[in-house]
Image (tube, rainbow, N blue to C red):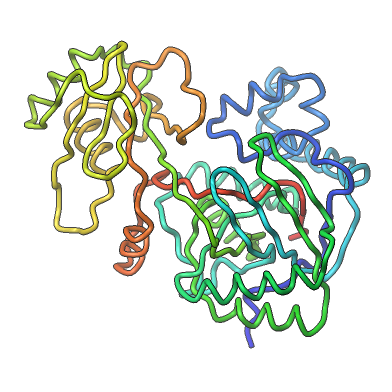
Length: 382
């Protein structure tokens, strides 16, 4: 059998605490750069290892990613020696429970290029993929996991994992993150239970719930650290869009959108929409409700694509891939100095499945699955 789902052959499990913040908390390079200015952050955190060219020392020295990677490898070696212990041939049953859902899954290695097994749900930014691929190849170690969700039969996986965790009793790692989520991780070595679990995973078709860029980057190494989970309480949050540096005010936005035939209502409830089909835009202390048009025959229609192509490109003449449009997961702080916040509804999971069934991809940064695994609890050699 082609073992496209495998144990972690050589890994490192955290002994005390993860060095630095969760690397997945940062949506934009500028946020990473700001976080790395904190005392000790540029030399003693996994964040600096994953973004070595964004440390103050690298920026002041004019170091690009290729130049900074040897520094990152040395820093990773030091962190593993201080904060981690080595393990071999394990999979890691994992549970995270918190205010934004619960996920009971297993950390393991996956070949992302296995035909028909791992499907991207969203388009990706090529430059981000290239950067992450270079970091993975340069470090030869995965420090964070993508989240993959079975298309079907998830209840069987969840039930088996519950039994295995009960048998293993005390977890190898227990941690509560800054958002109040409890993370517990067990280690399952070679034996009948590991074989049973891997055989079940081998039969799955998986969607990328979180980490489309990581999955694409891992194609260069043929090995991806992944949390495979079916919930049982996954949630999909919104990822909004931010207009910045455009100089557009609320009057101009309303006029431009109405000029192309959109129905815009002013003075509405500023809360984000709960259901697809409309957006609520906050600008200049006011709220606009914009009904989204039907722009094509493909169903279901994903609001993020309509916003980027119609509201942003067509009406405002702004390149959605340029610096004036940013993404903002729901619940994250709103950046200062923005022109407008375009609030979108969460994409229903049934729409995610329908897009997958049609062989399509959603627009980039459309879904925000929670709760996510805590980066840095398990590192995996590639």
